[in-house]
Length: 299
Length: 282
Image 1 (cartoon, rainbow over the protein chains, first blue to last red):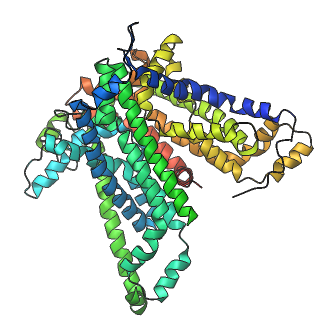
Image 2 (image 1 turned 180 degrees about the horizontal axis):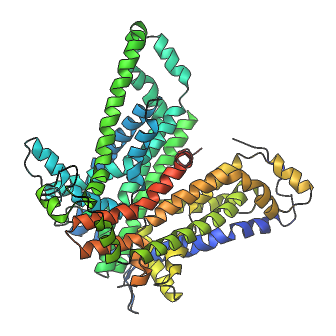
């Protein structure tokens, strides 16, 4: 929406100076705790440094070239992709499904919305604890329920095969409500007249979804997709809380790897280089998103 | 949807019943882990091992809550979390309202560039900045103080974005009238714009409070003293102490989570509107 701004630049003589005063508090803290650290990260990535000792050895791009042949790094990258491949499509399907179910008025709407949203308000530390208990091999309720149906005990958190599945399940549970809300807004913004016209034409439910809902929801779906991919790349706390990267590194994702290198092994320069690679990936994804949105609004 | 019309209301009723049933089932699945927290928290440790899936305890062990609370310093930790969350909320609202107003209403050199830079920080995984921030805090002598828990989160581009989007939608004519009466920018902001921005301010307040109450990262990395421990860090230390004592752990989970759940109930509508507007970028 464009509102005419008759109070233009010449409202007062010192308008610019005043504006800088207004943004000063924000930019003061943004510079200290966002911009400066990113700049430091770039510098650190060119050095061999443990984060504390006075000797910082300049090594140029060595950290970057070392990373590309570091098997642990590549494995963490692989784990992140596995995590994204598992949680993003399923997460979108789940959130969209919940939103579609809650689109029209139904008894208990508030209750359902709350039920799906409560995990979002729960901290990741608590979520990790809850799921460790929920997925416990011997006393967990999930194995208890599955056992009642005759299934064997599944080692959810103690086997390298199931650990990633567990992390994905927990993430689906935790995030579904948040993206459900975004989908709900998208669904409500679709003009009702499309549906009325389709009804008169006698279109089936499947056709209505494919021809109206899905294409018109595309910008929102795309936004959710990008946000989820970025969130998934940044995943750290849920791993820290549920599996601590284990067993045998099977859930050690990208940020967890960087965190361990920097804070446990003291390879700060090396971790900084890995962090910048992640930042680059995230920026590329964001750039693609903007390009996509522009292309859509252009046509 | 042909049947929809021919079979009429009965079909619609059946369809709604089916939708309702699916929703009930899904809600049960979503609530199960949380309900299990409450059930476990009032069982005895022996019962949990013998009848792990029993729905109700033989005897309600409310004393689990007392034991969990007394076994650590949860009282102090609640206070620390409250201080951290309130400090960050206050800081974010102040910086966001001022900057959001300037980006929406004022013209200055480099405006678009500065706004673009701020939005880009939303893409940066903040965990990666921990080390430079730690070094900075150490140089300022702020490591292991309340400042370390509050200051790193004071600037949040999300808040600026939220406020700018909202102020963009307020008719500027209201401010013009005040300006004619000789009011300055700051007074106009305080007496006209802020009262009209209660919605996004409350949204920011609630989202930030929940995020900070739930934050583990800052306390974990920037503090080490026990007296500065927040609830989430307290919960992880409690977990290390009582590794397999699930009854106490679940009681602790329940009371650590309660404040955000209450806040969510109180501000549900506002929160949903806020998430919605953050999803709509035009």
